[in-house]
Length: 279
Image (cartoon, rainbow, N blue to C red; front, top):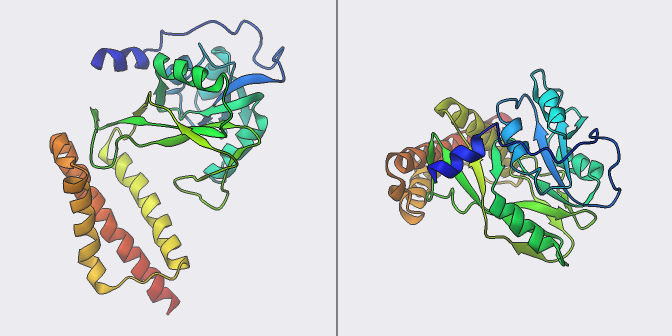
């Protein structure tokens, strides 16, 4: 696996299939557009594009006005780059859907890599497909280690969508929800996700998720009962570390389970604060 991940990270594996300028000469009925949403992703954009351009008919980068070399390097690799200020991710993804020239779209994040095997599976699935889309599993690399348990595997994501039969719910700003109009399939080959590199990055993202979840719970009329101050983190730790076998990932599994238990308490506290301010 180390050798595979190293190859996927390589910035030298660049295919030169796009000889024409990125916005000239495309067929209006392309079969598949790979979409990457970006903001200052120069660290990842080259290997990400390299992982899809051998089998995607179009690579579309929808950029949130990056101030680094993201757009420049994406164009150098033949991608079509469009600009839009990010308001929330569902709206950004729906805008990208509208811009895509393919009948099908494949969403890939800048910190993800598609393996050749996944590309082949997608092509095979779409050849005679009547589905509205497909879910794809992910292999999460957290703090330099692949996490196979504790809720991070197989981590299925809705990433292949047929235009006109799927879109993102604009009210779901975190952990986006796809609204399908038709049957949905599941693929077997995974994306490689270089998820959290540092503890600070992990904590910043979890605070964002936790705040959103507390606001949703508050809007739904849920209450922060005192027993939940202890019960919710204990249950979350048990779920992650025991039920989902986080112990099998060693120190990483233990650390992630403890952190997720802590953020279960933070969510309870945030909900409590919302109730107090309302009162």
